[in-house]
Amino acid sequence: MSELVRFGVSLEKPLLDRFDVLNRAKQYINRSEALRDLIRRELVEREWHEGRDVAGAITLVYDHHKRDIMSRAIDTQHEFQEVIISTQHIHLDHHNCLEIVAARGKAEEVQKLADALRSIKGVRHATLCMASTGREIG
Amino acid sequence: MSELVRFGVSLEKPLLDRFDVLNRAKQYINRSEALRDLIRRELVEREWHEGRDVAGAITLVYDHHKRDIMSRAIDTQHEFQEVIISTQHIHLDHHNCLEIVAARGKAEEVQKLADALRSIKGVRHATLCMASTGREIG
Amino acid sequence: MSELVRFGVSLEKPLLDRFDVLNRAKQYINRSEALRDLIRRELVEREWHEGRDVAGAITLVYDHHKRDIMSRAIDTQHEFQEVIISTQHIHLDHHNCLEIVAARGKAEEVQKLADALRSIKGVRHATLCMASTGREIG
Amino acid sequence: MSELVRFGVSLEKPLLDRFDVLNRAKQYINRSEALRDLIRRELVEREWHEGRDVAGAITLVYDHHKRDIMSRAIDTQHEFQEVIISTQHIHLDHHNCLEIVAARGKAEEVQKLADALRSIKGVRHATLCMASTGREIG
Image (tube, rainbow over all chains, first blue to last red; front, side):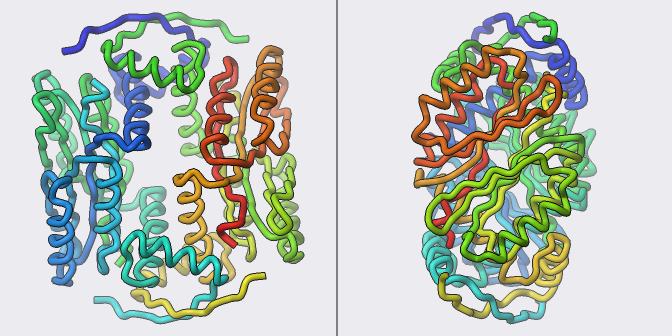
């Protein structure tokens, strides 16, 4: 558990008031918690930008009736097995599947995996969700 | 399986050349597949913007040693059980966990769930990854 | 000039250290200034999302040799004259112009103007840069 | 003027229908024009990502009554005069100014200029709008 440091911040009153309103809407319990999250978001963007070790999720939407997609998606995942941790498969309806791949590794490798999965014919949508290993934002 | 429609597109040659280079780098097998993905990205952005039925993934990074977080995260997930499909839990290292919540529902509800999870004290990072139910992008 | 309010914030030491490193790289003079900017970015995103009064810049890149573009761009700007403040025109090279339209009004109207300019045949690139009237972030 | 190349694209009918609806809402005159814009957006993102020569706009919002800001903003702009083309200054109301700096150069330099301007005490908001020199997207 990290040591907590306390320091003072000066803000214009109207700005602080609006921040407090926003934080209540977002259910934050106090300002420190809200500010922590703003800071971490900055740091995580930087981790990805600088090509550090990152963790993330890749979402795929596809029609599982096209058997070929599943086998190509699995082939691709095997090629990148070093960066893939696990995969969650969800049946959205009779046709559509949502697959969420948890990945970890160099930012560039995770990006490449997302590109490779997105490019599979029949994959309807793919996003890369940039999370963190947690180490640099503790 | 939807009927395929074929139509002609006119592009400036240098623009098309650069697009082809980019597509090879991204491993697309042909232009139609690459264009399809650009179109779907637009449509999915619109689904979220218009508050339609969406699917998505929420990633959380936290230190599981702080027991309180886990119980609060589970409480919050129960409150929103109608939009949560399933949760994948990954042990990143001795301290850090990556939890990926697959969600589905009105865009606004999924956003609220993401805000509620992000605001839990001790959650180090939370992102909302905007995917699709697949229905509108088939 | 708004009254300044001073309050205390608690942060984990390693997180604060990384934030300080980032702020030095970004040339901030102190933490309050860096935090103020993070807060304002949140508030401005919200102004746009909620359709409030906003200010912004629209950039256009086009080849001015195609005379038709200039007249169509001017026609469109006249249609939206209530939201346009002024326009800056830059000659990037023999062919390419960068035009920057300063706009102000309801978020939806400014967005429509950007869409209308982007859709003009021959406009090579258009972006909408979401700034603020400054009133809500003082 | 570049030579136009015509090629065929295959799309699922429901996807194409939704794309057409979206394009009408965005006022595109035909599909080629809409697709061209999607492609160029991709290419411009890449120009910035790869640190190529770019053009862009930086918006600043500040209270001009704080004289110190104006002189600091001008000092900073002089430091970066090689990447600054021109500046547009708009009086939003009695207090707030919107300043739009047109810039051109290596992506990294333009980013540094935006960071330097954003970090000036009293600058309420700063955004960097990533446009293009037009050369690579003709």
